[in-house]
Amino acid sequence: MISVLSSSWALLLGMMLLMVGNGLQGTLLGVRGAIEGFGTFEMSVVMSAYFLGFLGGSRLAPDMIRRVGHVRVFAALASFISAVLILYPAMPNSVAWILGRFVIGFCFSGVYVTAESWLNNSASNENRGQALSLYMIVQMVGIVSAQGLLVLADPSGYILFVISSVLVSISFAPILLSISPTPAFDTTKPMSLKELLHISPLGVIGMFLLGGVFSAQFGMAPVYGAEAGLSIGQISGFVASFYIGALVIQYPLGWMSDRMDRRLLIMIVSVIGGAAAIVAVIAGGHFIVLLAAAFLVGGMSNPLYSLLIAYTNDFLEYDDMAAASGGMVFISGLGAISGPIITGWIMTAFGPPGFFVFIAALMIALALYAAYRMTQRSAPSVDDTAAYAIIAPGSTPVAVEFAQEYAIEEAQNEEEQASE
Image (tube, rainbow, N blue to C red; front, top):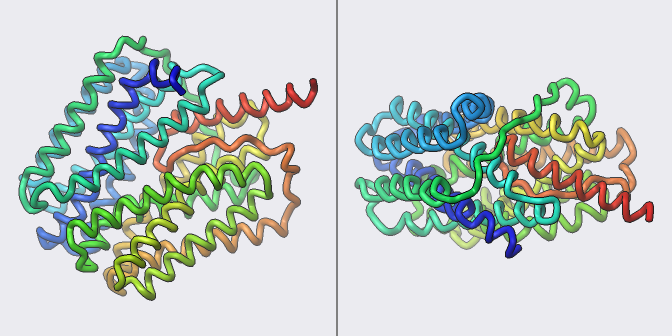
């Protein structure tokens, strides 16, 4: 762990500041949209635009980096992010916000691709797992910390947008001024969706459904809070609860996934997450219930991303894992684009509880499909399953390939130990 920090502290610090800025602007827009009088469906389209831009950025950023290099891409995208963050309060128009969210999503995706390739380059076979864990912790701590900043100023003013812009601008300083060499960049061509569906139907369907769940959390949670009449402090705590749950429960579920049928675990986790969302629909008027529900929904849904990738890996050869990861990220991205829009439509029709109705429906659907798949083929032996690598939802293909490299190395080490 110390070796990872010594070689990558600048990158990890920069990424944490970046996540604070991104987490703040996402929640702030949900609150500010209600102040500006935007409708729930309008805000759902605004939030969805981020995921459309993010998906496009994850596909185009590798080509940009190959043409002009990491540093130039990093600096250019940072400039666009800071500019858009300042323009939000100056242009309180839903069309302008949709375009801004698209640009923000595209730029953040490119920044993540660049930073994750640097992190992968600085990690060795011995500390790759620790680097992944630290990266995930930094992401979650950054988003949770961002929620605390929401109470520092009036969301109807400019200050919070300025803070978000400054944090993003500062985040690039430790990364660009570090002495780490610029890595060579390459990504694997994604496996086709048809091939992936044939190899792991549960992995593909589960990723699509999970993309909708994650984007609803990340995009529509603050909109729900504003529509439900929560105070700024309560919205901050509500949004943070999703990510605290993810951080706390990720590791126990990872330990369990290496010791049991992963389909059964996927089903159980999905049922718990869906049940928590249903409880929030029934008793959402009590803030403590909302916090507990958010904690469980986030704690169940976020580890499912890693679980589904690990389960898919159980049916892949080592050489195919990296290609499969790109396809899985794309499938999750498609689900993420539709998530906020469908959530907004349901909330418009049924009120704020529609937020949790949508999440419950997707989680229960995933649980039922996992139960169905358990009747279609036998589970691989626990001894033959791939290693579980922690990956946060919303990661780019670079981060997922990074995790796949760790999974392959762990599996090869286990095989060597078994042969000895």
